[in-house]
Image 1 (cartoon, one colour):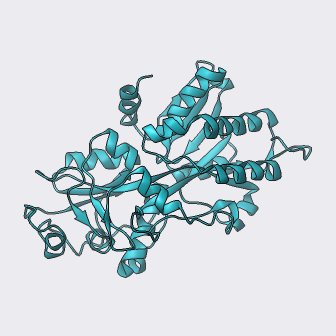
Image 2: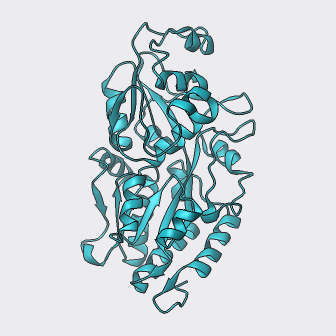
Image 3: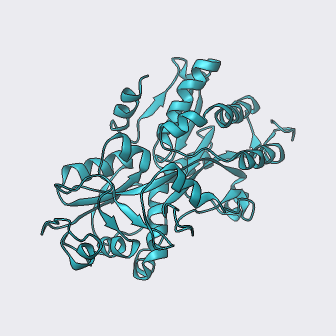
Length: 347
């Protein structure tokens, strides 16, 4: 599958399953976050070529992925909003990070090129609260002196499905806009004050591209490959930054991976002059006791292979591979947490 074809497939629909083998019954099955979909798809393509084993991953949103792994209808779930320790324990699940990347604000404004506009969490929060309704509002023009901004209404676009991307977006806005935290808060699914919904990155991007004056949010790899205009964001150190690998790495530099159960770090609004403020980690969920040990071993083999061989593909798609030290922690967690029905470690 060529890269152009891969990203063309992204717009077909977030609920579409992407199969990488004609023998679908023998494939691994996973479901969940749209945020890591491009890299999981690329890894699966390469893994199939290397091993002959396929993966069928449904890009249905983090909320649906959590539901499916809890219901044991897939071999693994994927979420960008880490589950807390008590929920993991209650469901008999283990959680580990797989990839890092960023979420960006996207806009549809004539004459505004990708990366040119500057926005802050405070201003975006007020837009999503319906308090700032025009693109030439004083709060926006003050951030963008000399930029010709229209007297157009702002159309807010948000996710309509339960979404880890929404969790990262709303967590950032809650940390930078106190009123947004009070009225909306952070979550995979929240009660939006204004706006129109779209399902998946695809749905949000389609609405933003269709509606002049729209603003929305998608993961960076999707925005870049589809040439959708993104904005700069002001980080915790007061610097306006662009999304890129180095700035995602900067946000993750001081992450305390072992301080919370299931490696549940949230990398939004991290300190550092170059830190991208909506950096996210995508997590994999598996049952600690694997009823089908062979399938469980194959899931672990897939991600172990990806950690060792998938770094270049991740960088090409504007994701950040896990540091080697974190990969070692993940491998240790597999040994400790993943067992077959008899209690024997599967890794």
